[in-house]
Image 1 (cartoon, rainbow, N blue to C red):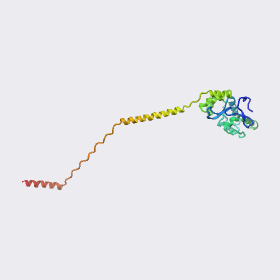
Image 2: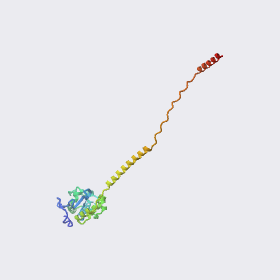
Image 3: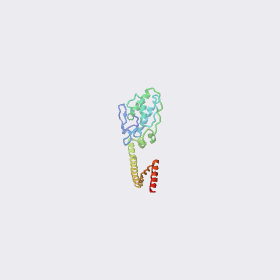
Image 4: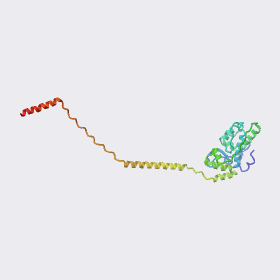
Length: 243
Protein backbone atom coordinates (compact mmCIF):
# COMPACT_ATOMS: atom_id res chain seq x y z
CA UNK A 1 0.00 0.00 0.00
CA UNK A 2 0.99 3.59 -0.46
CA UNK A 3 2.38 5.04 2.80
CA UNK A 4 0.05 7.30 4.74
CA UNK A 5 2.27 10.29 4.02
CA UNK A 6 1.13 10.13 0.37
CA UNK A 7 -2.38 11.39 0.80
CA UNK A 8 -4.88 13.80 -0.63
CA UNK A 9 -3.82 16.36 -3.18
CA UNK A 10 -1.70 13.98 -5.27
CA UNK A 11 -2.66 12.71 -8.71
CA UNK A 12 -2.68 8.99 -8.07
CA UNK A 13 -4.47 6.96 -10.73
CA UNK A 14 -5.04 3.21 -11.16
CA UNK A 15 -2.10 1.45 -12.82
CA UNK A 16 -3.48 -2.06 -13.25
CA UNK A 17 -1.05 -3.47 -10.67
CA UNK A 18 -3.36 -3.16 -7.70
CA UNK A 19 -1.92 0.13 -6.46
CA UNK A 20 -2.51 3.77 -7.39
CA UNK A 21 0.01 5.20 -9.83
CA UNK A 22 1.80 8.50 -9.92
CA UNK A 23 0.75 10.81 -12.74
CA UNK A 24 3.43 12.26 -14.98
CA UNK A 25 3.30 16.04 -14.98
CA UNK A 26 1.43 16.10 -11.67
CA UNK A 27 3.38 13.82 -9.34
CA UNK A 28 6.62 13.44 -11.23
CA UNK A 29 8.38 14.89 -14.25
CA UNK A 30 10.94 13.67 -16.75
CA UNK A 31 11.48 17.03 -18.46
CA UNK A 32 12.30 20.60 -17.52
CA UNK A 33 9.69 23.35 -17.45
CA UNK A 34 10.44 24.16 -21.10
CA UNK A 35 9.44 20.60 -22.01
CA UNK A 36 12.95 19.37 -22.87
CA UNK A 37 13.42 15.72 -21.92
CA UNK A 38 15.83 14.90 -19.09
CA UNK A 39 17.80 11.68 -18.56
CA UNK A 40 16.03 11.14 -15.23
CA UNK A 41 12.56 11.40 -13.69
CA UNK A 42 12.04 13.15 -10.36
CA UNK A 43 9.21 13.68 -7.91
CA UNK A 44 7.23 16.92 -7.83
CA UNK A 45 7.09 17.89 -4.16
CA UNK A 46 9.06 16.40 -1.30
CA UNK A 47 6.56 13.58 -0.59
CA UNK A 48 6.54 12.25 -4.13
CA UNK A 49 10.30 12.46 -4.38
CA UNK A 50 10.67 10.65 -1.06
CA UNK A 51 8.53 7.84 -2.51
CA UNK A 52 10.99 7.47 -5.40
CA UNK A 53 13.84 7.35 -2.89
CA UNK A 54 12.00 4.67 -0.94
CA UNK A 55 11.62 2.72 -4.19
CA UNK A 56 15.39 2.82 -4.71
CA UNK A 57 15.96 1.61 -1.16
CA UNK A 58 13.63 -1.35 -1.75
CA UNK A 59 15.49 -2.19 -4.97
CA UNK A 60 18.86 -2.06 -3.18
CA UNK A 61 17.87 -4.91 -0.89
CA UNK A 62 18.28 -7.26 -3.87
CA UNK A 63 21.62 -5.88 -5.10
CA UNK A 64 23.57 -8.82 -3.64
CA UNK A 65 21.26 -11.69 -4.60
CA UNK A 66 20.51 -10.28 -8.07
CA UNK A 67 24.08 -9.05 -8.63
CA UNK A 68 23.85 -5.34 -9.46
CA UNK A 69 25.53 -2.25 -8.05
CA UNK A 70 23.45 -0.62 -5.28
CA UNK A 71 21.73 2.57 -6.35
CA UNK A 72 22.46 6.00 -4.92
CA UNK A 73 19.26 6.81 -3.05
CA UNK A 74 18.76 10.24 -4.61
CA UNK A 75 15.23 9.72 -5.95
CA UNK A 76 16.34 10.36 -9.53
CA UNK A 77 15.01 7.51 -11.65
CA UNK A 78 17.39 7.04 -14.56
CA UNK A 79 19.27 4.36 -16.52
CA UNK A 80 20.81 2.75 -13.41
CA UNK A 81 17.43 2.28 -11.77
CA UNK A 82 16.04 0.86 -15.02
CA UNK A 83 18.97 -1.58 -15.25
CA UNK A 84 18.49 -2.67 -11.62
CA UNK A 85 14.77 -3.26 -12.15
CA UNK A 86 15.60 -5.42 -15.17
CA UNK A 87 17.02 -7.90 -12.63
CA UNK A 88 13.57 -8.10 -11.02
CA UNK A 89 12.01 -10.01 -13.91
CA UNK A 90 8.94 -11.01 -11.91
CA UNK A 91 7.75 -7.41 -11.79
CA UNK A 92 6.20 -5.96 -14.95
CA UNK A 93 5.82 -2.35 -16.05
CA UNK A 94 9.44 -1.40 -15.40
CA UNK A 95 10.96 -1.11 -18.88
CA UNK A 96 11.46 2.67 -18.85
CA UNK A 97 12.16 5.35 -16.26
CA UNK A 98 8.69 6.78 -16.89
CA UNK A 99 7.03 3.44 -16.15
CA UNK A 100 9.07 2.92 -13.01
CA UNK A 101 8.25 6.39 -11.67
CA UNK A 102 4.54 6.05 -12.48
CA UNK A 103 4.30 2.55 -10.97
CA UNK A 104 6.46 3.33 -7.94
CA UNK A 105 3.73 2.58 -5.33
CA UNK A 106 2.95 -0.82 -6.86
CA UNK A 107 6.63 -1.70 -7.35
CA UNK A 108 7.36 -0.90 -3.69
CA UNK A 109 4.58 -3.25 -2.64
CA UNK A 110 5.81 -6.00 -4.98
CA UNK A 111 9.39 -5.67 -3.73
CA UNK A 112 8.18 -5.95 -0.14
CA UNK A 113 6.30 -9.12 -1.07
CA UNK A 114 9.36 -10.70 -2.74
CA UNK A 115 11.57 -9.74 0.21
CA UNK A 116 9.13 -11.41 2.61
CA UNK A 117 8.40 -14.61 0.68
CA UNK A 118 11.37 -15.08 -1.62
CA UNK A 119 13.89 -16.21 0.96
CA UNK A 120 16.68 -14.14 -0.58
CA UNK A 121 19.49 -12.67 1.48
CA UNK A 122 18.75 -8.97 1.62
CA UNK A 123 21.41 -6.27 1.31
CA UNK A 124 21.44 -2.84 3.03
CA UNK A 125 18.97 -0.35 1.62
CA UNK A 126 21.27 2.67 1.54
CA UNK A 127 20.76 6.12 3.07
CA UNK A 128 18.63 8.71 1.27
CA UNK A 129 20.56 11.63 -0.21
CA UNK A 130 19.18 15.14 0.14
CA UNK A 131 18.41 16.55 -3.32
CA UNK A 132 20.79 19.38 -4.24
CA UNK A 133 22.02 20.92 -7.45
CA UNK A 134 25.18 18.83 -7.09
CA UNK A 135 23.36 15.52 -6.68
CA UNK A 136 21.07 16.47 -9.58
CA UNK A 137 24.04 17.16 -11.84
CA UNK A 138 25.69 13.93 -10.68
CA UNK A 139 22.57 12.08 -11.83
CA UNK A 140 22.88 13.57 -15.31
CA UNK A 141 20.73 16.68 -15.01
CA UNK A 142 22.13 19.55 -17.11
CA UNK A 143 23.66 22.28 -14.94
CA UNK A 144 21.30 24.97 -16.24
CA UNK A 145 18.20 23.11 -14.96
CA UNK A 146 19.71 21.52 -11.83
CA UNK A 147 18.29 24.28 -9.65
CA UNK A 148 14.84 23.82 -11.16
CA UNK A 149 14.92 20.09 -10.39
CA UNK A 150 16.17 20.68 -6.85
CA UNK A 151 13.48 23.28 -6.10
CA UNK A 152 10.80 20.93 -7.43
CA UNK A 153 11.93 17.93 -5.38
CA UNK A 154 12.29 19.79 -2.07
CA UNK A 155 9.10 21.87 -2.07
CA UNK A 156 6.58 20.81 0.62
CA UNK A 157 3.75 20.07 -1.84
CA UNK A 158 3.19 19.78 -5.58
CA UNK A 159 1.56 23.21 -5.60
CA UNK A 160 4.54 24.71 -3.81
CA UNK A 161 6.87 23.01 -6.27
CA UNK A 162 5.03 24.42 -9.26
CA UNK A 163 5.05 27.92 -7.77
CA UNK A 164 8.75 27.72 -6.90
CA UNK A 165 9.71 26.51 -10.38
CA UNK A 166 7.58 29.21 -12.02
CA UNK A 167 9.35 31.86 -9.92
CA UNK A 168 12.77 30.86 -11.19
CA UNK A 169 14.28 33.22 -13.80
CA UNK A 170 14.16 32.05 -17.36
CA UNK A 171 17.32 30.47 -18.66
CA UNK A 172 18.69 32.70 -21.40
CA UNK A 173 20.58 31.22 -24.29
CA UNK A 174 23.79 32.94 -25.32
CA UNK A 175 23.93 31.09 -28.64
CA UNK A 176 22.35 33.93 -30.69
CA UNK A 177 24.84 36.40 -29.21
CA UNK A 178 27.76 34.10 -30.00
CA UNK A 179 26.59 33.53 -33.56
CA UNK A 180 25.99 37.26 -34.03
CA UNK A 181 29.48 38.03 -32.78
CA UNK A 182 31.05 35.50 -35.13
CA UNK A 183 29.10 36.93 -38.07
CA UNK A 184 30.28 40.45 -37.20
CA UNK A 185 33.89 39.29 -37.07
CA UNK A 186 33.57 37.65 -40.48
CA UNK A 187 32.00 40.74 -42.04
CA UNK A 188 34.57 43.13 -40.55
CA UNK A 189 37.37 40.84 -41.66
CA UNK A 190 36.03 40.64 -45.20
CA UNK A 191 35.64 44.41 -45.46
CA UNK A 192 39.11 45.02 -44.03
CA UNK A 193 40.71 42.59 -46.46
CA UNK A 194 38.94 44.18 -49.43
CA UNK A 195 40.13 47.66 -48.32
CA UNK A 196 43.69 46.40 -47.87
CA UNK A 197 43.71 44.90 -51.36
CA UNK A 198 42.36 48.13 -52.84
CA UNK A 199 45.03 50.26 -51.15
CA UNK A 200 47.77 47.81 -52.10
CA UNK A 201 46.72 47.98 -55.75
CA UNK A 202 46.78 51.81 -55.77
CA UNK A 203 50.15 52.19 -54.05
CA UNK A 204 51.99 49.53 -56.01
CA UNK A 205 54.66 51.04 -58.45
CA UNK A 206 54.07 50.75 -62.16
CA UNK A 207 55.96 47.87 -63.70
CA UNK A 208 59.29 48.93 -65.38
CA UNK A 209 59.34 48.92 -69.13
CA UNK A 210 61.77 46.39 -70.60
CA UNK A 211 64.99 47.84 -72.19
CA UNK A 212 65.01 47.78 -75.98
CA UNK A 213 66.81 44.83 -77.43
CA UNK A 214 69.65 45.87 -79.83
CA UNK A 215 70.28 43.64 -82.79
CA UNK A 216 73.84 42.26 -82.90
CA UNK A 217 76.18 43.79 -85.52
CA UNK A 218 76.64 41.77 -88.65
CA UNK A 219 80.03 40.07 -88.63
CA UNK A 220 82.58 41.29 -91.23
CA UNK A 221 83.34 38.91 -94.04
CA UNK A 222 86.62 37.22 -93.45
CA UNK A 223 89.15 37.57 -96.30
CA UNK A 224 91.11 34.57 -97.27
CA UNK A 225 94.89 34.53 -98.02
CA UNK A 226 94.28 34.33 -101.80
CA UNK A 227 92.23 37.48 -101.74
CA UNK A 228 94.96 39.40 -99.89
CA UNK A 229 97.58 38.40 -102.48
CA UNK A 230 95.39 39.45 -105.38
CA UNK A 231 94.79 42.81 -103.73
CA UNK A 232 98.53 43.38 -103.34
CA UNK A 233 99.16 42.48 -106.99
CA UNK A 234 96.55 44.97 -108.13
CA UNK A 235 98.16 47.72 -106.06
CA UNK A 236 101.66 46.90 -107.55
CA UNK A 237 100.37 46.93 -111.12
CA UNK A 238 98.69 50.30 -110.54
CA UNK A 239 101.98 51.76 -109.34
CA UNK A 240 103.91 50.46 -112.40
CA UNK A 241 101.39 51.89 -114.80
CA UNK A 242 101.74 55.31 -113.25
CA UNK A 243 105.44 55.25 -113.88
